[in-house]
Length: 473
Image 1 (cartoon, rainbow, N blue to C red):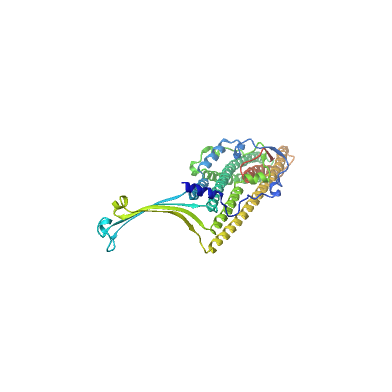
Image 2: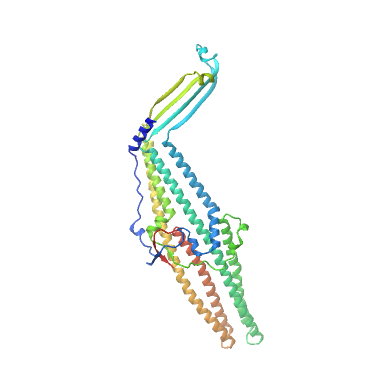
């Protein structure tokens, strides 16, 4: 034990080969405000970090997300991969401790002629038994084991961030599926309301036709428009069913097992407050895929040290104790006892393979650096795109609401004027068609905004850091 303590102290004071890792810093432009972010700042969202879906205040959605986080198959795969990485870390850490092995063999055979059979316990034909205990401890003078542990620990951290990235994706896809289902339901309700309005217009037109104030052509035009709007409902219903089926898969259920309340809501998800977006630095510190790429870069850098250590001798302290004899009685009784204690030096004179492994590790480190840079650029691109799309959709919806309001006024005036005989049925038909199109476009815009919100939350990494964040509403 005194020898091992001295060796451990020597190993701790020894040098560690290979480059020392320093996390890359984002550029000033990457860490600054978003191009599409505006300039307003508000306090961070008052929900627990990462639970952005609770901003919608929908208990059904909260339950579905909880189910997905518990039973989603992709998340289960990510958890299993994390457990595998942790097991690999435990295996590598075991190299820091003495390796103890017990061996033994038993063979039946014949001793050479002239052997002292009496001393060996019998005749020439007998059992020959060998047992022993071996202890080996590698002195990590150059930090090979430390670098290996460092790499394995970084792999665990990368797997943890991978799991968080899957979690963000699962929550986003679950929320999107639910939002698609309720948006389709609202669009169905809008279409049914439009069909109801056209039914009333058709009834009125047929009364006018019966009174000789309109022609069959006038009624046929209204009926055609009504049937066109009616034909849109089955397509919207199919979209709603598809979203619900997707939701069942995300929550780990068969379609028949999805709770009935998942399909009850008829109004599109809407936010009651701005979305905090922060800046590039906060985004890169929060996005799990960027953090996973950075941890893989750390792992690849540490493995350069592991490969570099193979250029130098590997020193181990070892010892063994054992006994060999004829028959079990001699081995565990008065059989001969052997023991060995001493250092072991292992060094490959041919260093070409080791240098090739170093070159490969350095190349892998450059690959990891390029992937990290790519992850940073992808995170910025996705966030800028999602932010710009969301803002433009809000502007589009505002214009569509104005158009709908104008179409409602025009349709109301046209109906009144048509009853008074001031306009013909064709002008009324145009007004009804314009209103129907405006209603449908607003409902579609609401659905697009709902999806854009989810995309923005996912691009932002599903959580917020810091006390002050920029916001969009």
